[in-house]
Image (cartoon, rainbow, N blue to C red; front, side, top):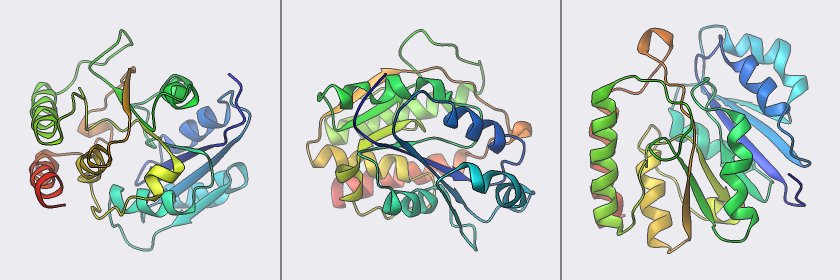
Length: 233
């Protein structure tokens, strides 16, 4: 895939000592001519920070270290602010999402069809690990509720994989520090009438013993954010 558009890949990171090196290697191997890799370490305390400083810093364009753990939304806010690419992609630091699918994710933007693209875990024929029935039900409930308020028809608002034209995402004032980012950004891009596309992606979900962090509390927070940013945002 060739394009003159520069790609910024933002990797928020918190306590991913077992996966961060692998993810960075896969992102670096992505066959795209112009890209920058930005990592935001959100005050990891499991050895991730040391690995970033000792092994990974020379291999990426920029690493920003938060001195306190603020949450994924705060890490993304930091990364988005300094991104210089024409397209900004969010890539989690775990192994749940495959960087090889980033070209598929950004294609609607390259084609001039979209300003925003979501990678949906609930459409398409890619591989999916079978985990957490109630997480799936909760996600579908939150997605349906968000769609009702925003008048759109997404299938997966809680997906990590999102791509934006840089001027779109940098024009949005992101308030949420944790996983409420997903709902907030959906409400705000829908209100601005940006063209949103979805593409089906694979999903290699983790269990909590493997480092999964989202919990039912984040679901409650997402519900609050749906009401806040769709009705009052």
